[in-house]
Image 1 (cartoon, rainbow, N blue to C red):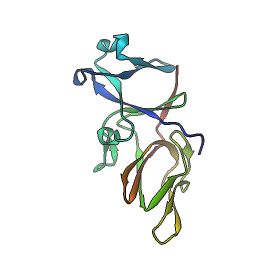
Image 2: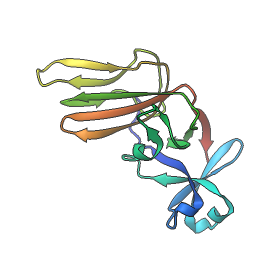
Image 3: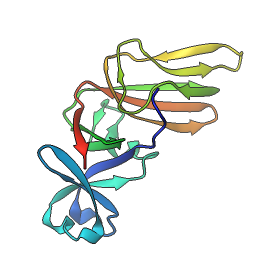
Length: 164
């Protein structure tokens, strides 16, 4: 696990759905810029990537029944923008336990059987939650607190651009 940084998440939406857009992405060929509504250029686009609250954003872009994405999404961590589109193949991993400690960070490359979390059980045992595929950790969040539950999204289809 590298240093701890809090990622930012942007979900592709229709501009007409939003009256109060805080931040959105301007996507160029080689890089990505983060713009605010004060730039007053959001009206030039029909669809844009709009910033959402990271923790609960999985509700807006994941389809659990079909194990796929229902919207294009971008996660920004450090100076990298990680993109996944709705056609991307993803792996969803959910871990439940008394105490869970993530061992990887967003944007980290993992292999099949890499340790994603350490799970401390009520019987004072230590277990590890493993990845079922190789790829990049695109997103993870804690979805419940007692017992703790973590959700991970891993994909090989992540496209990376630099953030300027």
